Every structure is written in C-alpha cells, then in structure tokens.
Length: 508
Image 1 (cartoon, rainbow, N blue to C red):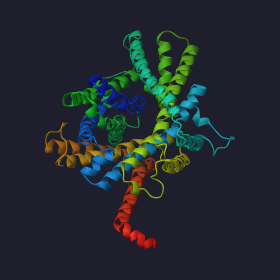
Image 2 (cartoon, rainbow, N blue to C red):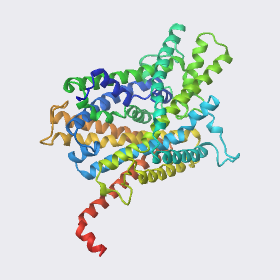
Image 3 (cartoon, rainbow, N blue to C red):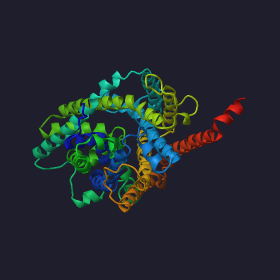
Image 4 (cartoon, rainbow, N blue to C red):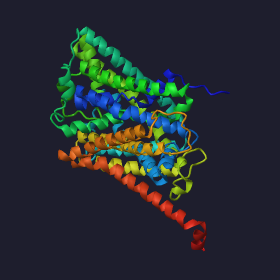
C-alpha cells in the first residue's frame, strides 16, 4: 500500500508540536519581560530557520541510514567526531532528566496545595533534609522508580500520560483567548504597561538592566526554546512535493512559532504586573509558570468583578489544573526519554564500541544495563547539585542553566559538519535549500558561531557576577560527557587496532 504523504498543513503542525514549548513563555517573561521578544526573533533568524534547512538536507540525503545524526556526522566528518557529537546530544537528555526529576515536585505541590510549597518541605523536621536537599532525595528516588518500570517494558503509562500534550495545547488557547477577553474588558489597559521600543530594549528584571553580558546570555534560553527541530530530519521524504512544500513548511512553522512566542509573552504582560507578581524572593525558574498561571485565573476573575475570596479560589483551582496537565506531560516525556535517546544512540553506533554489557539491547527492545548506568549518573548529579547548599531559587537556576547549555551545544556539531557534508560527492541531492558551497559554509558557520557565543556568554556571565557555582555546573556536564565520549571511542579504536588474532594470542 502506498504510504500517505504529509500535506503542507500537517508538516507545519508536526514541526510546531516538536519545537514549541509553552513553559518557555512564562520563564522568558520572568527573566526579561517584554525585552525577551527581540531575542526570540534574532535566535529564529540566526539559528532556527537555517538550522532546520540543514537538518532537512541531512535527513533527505541519508534517508536510508538508520543511525540518524550519527550517520550524518560520520559520513561528513568522521566516526570519532560523530560519536562525540551524538554522545553529547544523548547526555543533554541526561541533564534534562536531572532537571525534571527535581522540578516535577513543583507541579505535585501545586496539585496538592494549590501553590508551590516545596521550599517549606522538610523530612522529620531536619534542616539537612529540607528545601533543595529534600527535593534532591525525592528526585533520585523518583528516577529509580521510573527506570525500574521502564526496564520492565511497561509502556502503557506513557500512553495514558500523553494526554498531557493535548492539554498543554488547550492551556495555550485558554491564555490566548482569556488574555484578549481581559484586555477588552479593561478597555485596552495592560497590567504591565508596554512602552514600545523602550519595553523591547529594557528588561523588566533588575538583574538584567544595564548588564549587557547577562542580556546576551539570555539568547541561550531563546535557542533552547527552538530545540527539537532535529526531529524533522526524517520528514522530507514523507512530505508531498518536498522541494516546494518543505522549505515553505519550515519557514511557515518558524514564523508561527516565533509569532506565538512573541504574542504570548506580550499577553503574559497584559495580566501580570512584573513587580507585584514576580518581584518576590520565592519565585524561581521552577515555579514561575505556576505563579503566572495562578495569576492569570485571579486577574481574569478581578476583570469581571469577582471578590477577593473568589479570586484566590480561582487562582488555586487553575494552578491545580495547570499543574496536573504539566505533571502528565512531564511523566509521559520521562517514561519515553529514559530509554528512547539511549536506545537510539546504542543502535546507531557500532555494537562493539560499548564496554561490557552496556551496549546490549534486550529482547523486549530495552537497553536495560545502560539504563541502570544512566540512572546512577542522574541520581549522582541530582544529589550533588541539591546538596550544594543553595537557596531554592539558585537550585532551579543551576538546573535550568545546565539543561539550556547541555541541549544547545550538541547542535554545534551538526552545524559545523554541514559545510563538509556539502562537499561530499555521489550522494542524493534531490532536496536542496543551500544551492552553493558558499551559502552552505556561510550559514553553517553563522549557526555554529551563534550557538558558541550564546553558550559562552551563558557560561561566563554567572561567574562575572560572582556566581561560580552556576558557571561550574553549566560547563561540567558538556566537558565531562565530551571527555567520556572521547575515552570510550579511543578505547574502541585501540581494541580495533589490536585485531582478532592479537586478542586470541593474549587469551592463550
């Protein structure tokens, strides 16, 4: 039976769902206010659109390869480069697991109490087992349970929790429609006044005002918001009339995502006065989304004359609903991502590359040995960060910085490999956006430099302000995992160099 191809609208929707993340909006507003919007535009032009076209060309040319990005880089640059890049791509998900394992207790708190009370949690009344330290212990226990169920092949849970994805879309529509209704009800008045170019230029967050390095470091948040575009690499040949529809789909989806982020950030300001709602010291990158969503419901009630008691009830009720939706979405993603990137990396690389039984895929399709090694790494990192003696605000700042840097650095490996890919002879070039070597090299290096400079500013900025801990944890993941990948592949090269005959002699 002939495979049904994706139409233009279906392609746009697939790209949108792979990339767009609602949580990026309240976090960006918290960090920069309206001034976040221009950086989303810059990141879209210098990274998202050109990088998406690179992914599309890679995916089309190597559509019959099963190794995904490993195959792209291996054929373009070489196997060691490909392995290090792929390994760092995989470990970016390890950092994501560290973040989510710790952060998932915020929606749980909102579901139970209607607000984030995690900073007051304590075990047996002990100061040592409270705040971020307790969250670290809970996160480690939570991740061990998730790993246990995943190794048993229980995938029905992720199917149930996938309902969270549809519910997140509903939240976007609610905020969009609700905000516009409130603006009309208040005759165009915004809770946070918009002063045109001045608001787009000057961050609302006092920490960013006048700090150019800190403002530049924000671009990593914008780059992270466009992450996930590598998932569209295999869609070129599944699209109707790809030469015409795929570039159109990428550009259209990029514009929809960019406008979506910009519009929603504006609308958050329509119901959130920055100083009144986000000026408190208990606001963190982990709970700001729930604070803003609570405020959305409360402000909606106030716009239509609700009493203060009803406003509080609406705030707590909507916080619980939003928290439940995010909890389901995160659980669904966690159950899948605990094994999926790991399995993809092991299956895409040479079988005898992995030491011991790490590379064994069981009959049920699960890399169980590797999953337990992964579990040990995640739990160790969670506990090291959580027992660092930081405030809850600093704890979530470190976790977010680790993920943003860790998940954007691997893209540099792909963009840097692209000009070399364009020089290859004898491969299928039925789909091309970059028609010349010159344009491929220009955009390949522009994207690579954008990623490099954004991450450099994001890494050094906290240290310049005396926050060496955030700088340390931002860089330690990529450095350690990059070094681990280098060691694993170097050992593999040495084993290959020995050869089977030499191995037999040694055994004898």
